[in-house]
Length: 302
Image 1 (tube, rainbow, N blue to C red):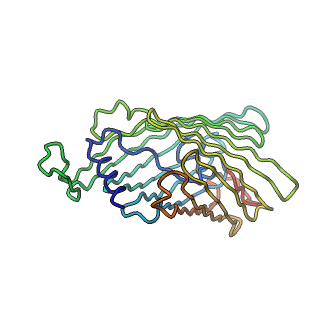
Image 2: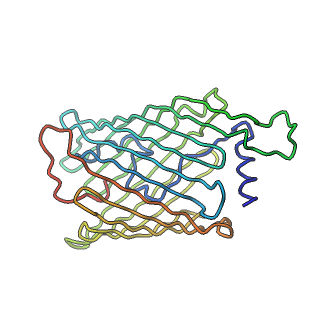
Image 3: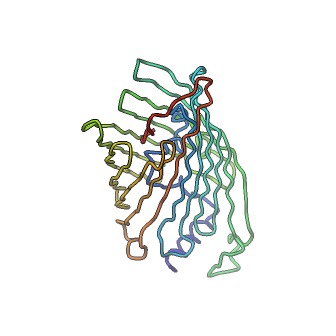
């Protein structure tokens, strides 16, 4: 525990030079709107998702993440609208990211379309500097008071859907690398995709991937989910040089689905941690469109 606490203190006291990266979570294939505004409106229902993650169980002040997002399609306007709120805590540092999102959908063919989206909001970063302990308390660069700062935030992305294939690219915190604020968030780049392979009328396999990169680090996730009769899914995921992940989920009702994942660490951190836990819920409310959308069965991978 002392090793992690030392790393966290070092991380947050260097004038916030690098700050923390975007949140890490395993259910990325269900929550693309969190990192790509172009995914806004990829369902005609009004979907609201909640997610909570506790990382590196066994450490004091270990990372924890919670977020809520919601989005829907305005069919007549060929537009998607939505919002995202992400709360992330790492040691003595807390980050709150709020965004409003818009996407314009262009129909390319009967079963394919292109979406271009943007997100606009803010990031509030706060540090409990008064709780930090230094080897040299008279260090002139030591942060000894609580600090909080609010900065604007902008995201941009595109998503292409062709029948059972979906592929997207995006960038979050587009302007942050040039920000004059002492609280900086590295610009992130994403690429992801998933493809549904129908085995028969009831069963399908969905391979997925996501690449997240900054100028400092690149993270790669590869996953495969098995879906049965729109009732439940189970799968595995590998985060390169970081973790092995097991995922399972159920459609509790036609509108409500629940998912759980467990990360088993593959890095040196496994000597000190018992893994990471994550749960999420998604509820599909009625559409905002005038013509009611009848939900015959939940679409797992929107």
